[in-house]
Image (cartoon, rainbow, N blue to C red):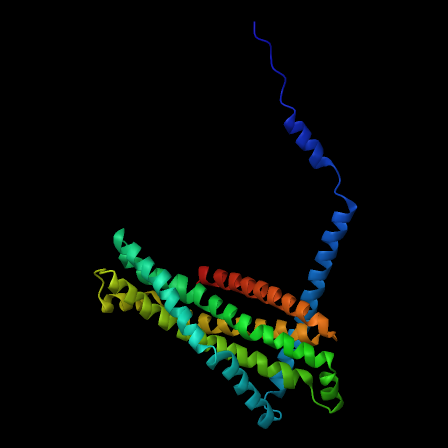
Amino acid sequence: METASAPPAKPALLQSVLALPLPQSYLNFVGHQIFRLLQTMQGVGAFALITLGVTLTKFNASWRVIHPLIRAQIDRAGVRLLPGIVLLGLALGLVIVGQTVSLLQKVGAEQYAGTVMVTVLIRELGPLATALVVLARVGTAIVIELGLSRAQGEVEALEALGIDPVHYLVMPRVIGLAAAIFSLTVYLILVAVVSGYLFVFLQDVPLLPGDYFNQIARALAWEDFALLGLKTATFGAIIATVTCYQGLAQRLRLEEVSDATTRAVAQSVAGCVLADALFILVYLFM
């Protein structure tokens, strides 16, 4: 005669453990991190609104000084990074575009090559990869420059001379990075598309150049061009605003500049990812 086995004690033990209150130290840590996040969002948002107001009202003020600064930022964040962007475009074309087209050809779905290229490369990977490159090369330098200027009292000296630091230091970087990321993204996409077909050609895939580029052209719509420009400009504005905020928001000691740079990189990446998620929603409802 079999006896009924006792029910396992693990679920009851697990429920009792989950029912225990969280340690006070853990709750304090979570609450402190949430408060810091909200405080940072408030500060960056207010700084962005101030920058927007200065840009709209003072764009042509002191244009003999400001406009050359904008061109210098475009040269720094755009022209000087062009060789690296070309190499990145070649890598993306060979690794992603070429293999994707080759795989679609093998499974008999080559008619979807244009749609895949537009979705993966033009809408998502191209703008985000370019923004991360600019952040790594230029965004970190902005935090260091402005942080050192603030630590050495140069920003206060500008204010004493009647010069608006946002107009002189922030606005050229915001406009310059927005224009640079847009231009670099266009170059990246063009190089990736061409090098991707080169990889397809080397694999002896029976796909004519006309068919390849026609599929991409048919998959594109006018909304893609408009949203590409808006997305890249948004990424540039986010990176410039966050990095300038971390460099100018508070007076830093020299040893605190590295920590401010780390925070700026993390916050810029988070801001670009969130903005990209919003643009994904726009693409879904187009």
